[in-house]
Length: 432
Image 1 (tube, rainbow, N blue to C red):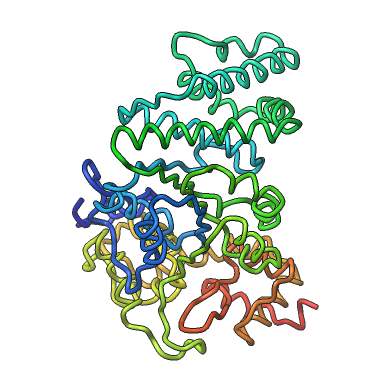
Image 2 (cartoon, rainbow, N blue to C red):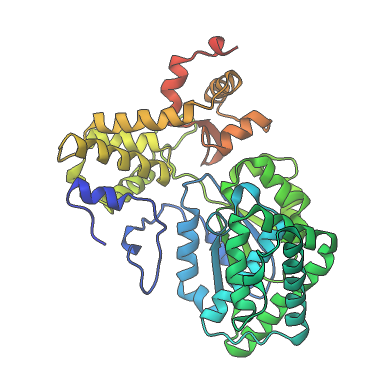
């Protein structure tokens, strides 16, 4: 995929889509190497102990490139040689605003079954494992028929077997509240038994892999960092954490960065095994923001250059869009994407600084609208001190990108650069 040579093409280059790697990828050329290697710790841990079943919590702001880095990791020859990789997005597979550990465990089983079957792996599940899964299916179907008669016929046993059931059931689990409620009603009272079935399934899968290619199973679960609020994330990974940590396989869960600020986080890591962070790209060398970090700026510049010819954007406009990005690829993408629409509408051939500023104004309005007076006071305090507390309102701002955490040596925080004009307009005394 070549960089765009006009602004209409550029709109398509900045449309959100994950970067894929390896054979068949159409957009691998868009990838930009970062000054750091955010997954180096995870890579070392995987390759040094491929047979382990440690779970990794991968944190970072939305838009730091976690999914892209995971896609790249999964396509690396060393990882491919040692692991059978199963990937799925919670946001695309489940209802993320109504997510339960039962839903997630079921989807892990379903996606693993589907992915390995599609790759030609003869799973060879033990008869007792198949019976257990089919028994669970029968219980769910029977209970659904009691709740809503005539709605469960397509889920009954058929020529497609378990694979067909998983495929049909997953869609219903995502779009139908009744299906989610019934599934939880069936499983939750016998959660220990269900976990045993899940454990047996993954043991059988690993035995099949050992026999056929000697690989270990690696499951990558994306978009859990997009849970609607950090309290839901804490409930999922703290009180229900032992369930998610139970399957005997290597699993990577993405999590919100705000979860790191919770008192329970040390306990959560203890249950799962390890955590790692994908930080924003560094744009300054000091936490006072006075000294520019040229490597980080060049990285963000390359992000734009890989997608469109730099002749399509004025230098001042490019510089301002990078500064406003806060080191988030997603925020930079949205700024350029919106600016391209503005420029095309006025029949311009290049993005101007005014185009970027108009795009920034629109994105700023999105961030401003939900702010309360308490939020404004917190934003002023963090901007002055460069530190965010672990209190509820501050975590809400961190989770929803009103505040950002940076790693330039020591950890520090500041207001999303898009909101700095907001602080000038709304003084702290006016917010109290």
